[in-house]
Structures are given as C-alpha cells and as structure tokens.
Image (cartoon, rainbow, N blue to C red; front, side):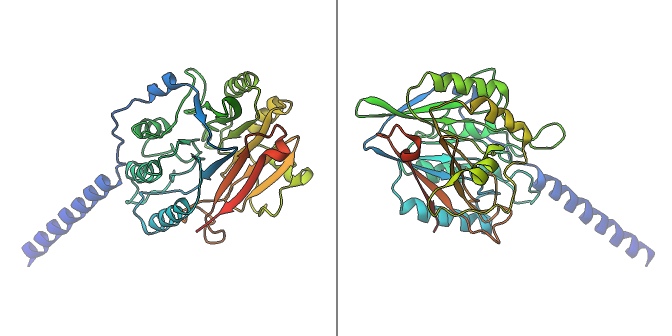
Length: 337
C-alpha cells in the first residue's frame, strides 16, 4: 500500500511538473520573423501620393487591442472591420495605435500572428496604409520596431523615420492633386510608458523635427498620433463642435501632462489643420479650436476596455484638397458595421 501511494505521488508530481513546463512554454511570447530590418525605414523618407480627386479619404483604425487575431473577440472585431472596409471607399488607411494588446497575459497571446492577419487584410485592398504606434503596441511580444519591420514586407505599407530622434515612426505623406502639392499628413509615435510605468510623452526632438517639416510645406498638414495632448480638453471646453459628431468625456483626455510641450511648441504653427488621435476608449470628438480641428476616435475592437459600453467604430476623415482654410477642409464620419 505504501509503495502504491509512493508511485501515485511520483506520478502526480511528474504530471504537475509537465503541466508547469507546458505552461511556461505556452506563455513564452511568439517571436517576429521578417526578411526586412527596421533600419530600412531611415532610407525610405517622406512619401508622395497622387490623388485622383479633390476629396481624399483617410480611414482611421485604432484601439482594436488584438490578442492573436483568432480569439472570439478578435474574430468579431476583424469581421466587423472587414464589413466596414468592404463597404467603404477610401484612399488610405492609418492604423492609429493600440492595434495590439500590450499587457494581456492570456496563453493565446500571439502578436506576430495578429500582425500577419492585420497585414494580409489591410494590404489586400491595394491602398497605401501606415501605422502610428500606440502605448500598448510594443509592450510585449515584439517592439514597435519589430511590428514595422514585419509590415515592411507588404507592398502598400508606408513607413519612415529620422535616425536619432525618439519614437519608431515619424514621416510625412505628401498628397499631390492636379500636379501640385495639395495636403500633407504627418505620422508620429506618441511613445508608450516611462521608467515609472506612467504614460510617456512626445519628446522635444520629435516636435522640432515635425515643425521643421511643416515649415518646409505650404499646404495644410494633418497630424496623426495615438495619445492626446492637454489641448484636447481645451478644444471641447472652449472650441466649436463639429456637426453631430458623437462625443463623450467619460475618460480624461488631459492626463498626459508631458504632452503639453507639444501644444506649446505647435500652437502658433498656422498650417496645422488637424490633430487626430485615439487612446481614449469612450466615444469620438471633433472640435475646432485655435484654427485647427482636434479629433479623437473611439475604440475599434471588442478586446478594448470599455467595449461593453461603447461599440467599436472607425473614423473617416475626408480632406478637401482644394481648401486652404482648415475649417472648410475636413469632413468627419463615424463608421461601424
């Protein structure tokens, strides 16, 4: 009897050790593999696109918070996104941050798999697309640089950066119409978390590089990054709301005080027409303030915190390439399946 108990104990211990080993292997984050190196973005530089009409349509997707692309919530998110993509005319897509979950410890977490599913889906529409990293995208399972290097393998993916400045992505997309420069889009990385695990902020070298690029251009410039600046709070307390665009102030938009530096250094740059962000998982907002629009898009996936109260949606921004006045240059629409 004692021997039987001893054998059973050994078997149970072996089973426990095997289960622990399996869990450790399963929890190990999958690694990105790519034929491309992130350093290629430094050679790509700014991009010029030729518009076929005066209405240039930018579809913005943010805060999908995908875990692997194949969980129940991920599949629901991607199915609804595909419905919107199939039913919408657009000229380019901007993935405006937190496309991937950053802190989820589920065994199903697989960022490379999710990145492939997203890349295959978006690139399949044959339109230019790009990525402004969010605070969650590069937290675990691969850095922002890993994500960008992987997506460099897609033919319609646009990327660029300046070596030596903060952030993984910062470049301009210049839009020509009827043979002349008509509009410019600036893509930025608003960074992630600092050493104290608090939200980081856009750094001075990024802002100075942005301003230098804007001053080289005579067109209106639309700026896209992920985390809002304190000016968004001023915009909706002191600015003019855009039409019937939905709005909720359930979550703060001014809780990243370091981004006040961005507001300070860019407040007098006259040809900034739009600053567009995500990050805040309540509803959308679009307000005209300080001669520019401040536009914030809601969550885009069922895996995002708050999706039980706010249904995922996406934002279509249509730019009138003939307009020189920022108030008249933009039309905003909320899209959902």
